[in-house]
Amino acid sequence: MKAIYPGSFDPVTYGHLDIIERASRVVDELIIGVLVNSAKNPLFTREERVQLLGEVTKDLPNVSVKTFEGLTVSFAKENDAHLIIRGLRAVTDFETEMQIAQTNHSIEPDIDTMFFTTQLEYAFLSSTIAKEVAGYGSDVSKLVPDVVAKAFAEKFF
Ligand code: ADP
Image (cartoon, rainbow, N blue to C red; front, side, top):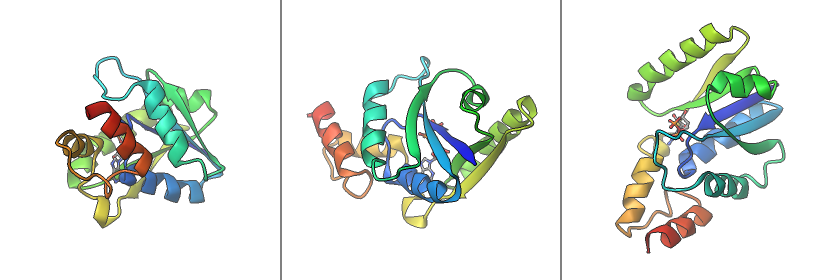
């Protein structure tokens, strides 16, 4: 079973990594899809986001990283994947995630979405929160892997 895990990953956090590790144990192959969305103004370039994801997943042999533009279901189809992985943090994620999953399924009935619920310790964590903490020079070691913390330091200071 092949799956994609799409997102902005600007940058990857321990919350993402937890979902990646758990999903990689359930599927045969997991392709992380870094969404390149011109409407968003990311802190990290597409190359930086891919590189950071590559470094933090280097010990997971069935995980790879690619970028994509446009519809998630098109990216899934191009990669011959029938499963989309998403993470759920709180009830607030649920409504939008359900809507996205239903939209995707109606466009491509062959493609389903599987949700992993976050571990409690990462329930509050998002890339936005990590960026804010890092931007004020506070310690991000509990939020993001070391390579990401270093990348923050280079960006901000
Ligand atoms: P997007 O911009 O598509 O929401 P993100 O990079 O923010 O992309 O997130 C990608 C996926 O990872 C989403 O399914 C999101 O809910 C999930 N995710 C993000 N942070 C966490 C976390 N702390 N715990 C579990 N899942 C998370």
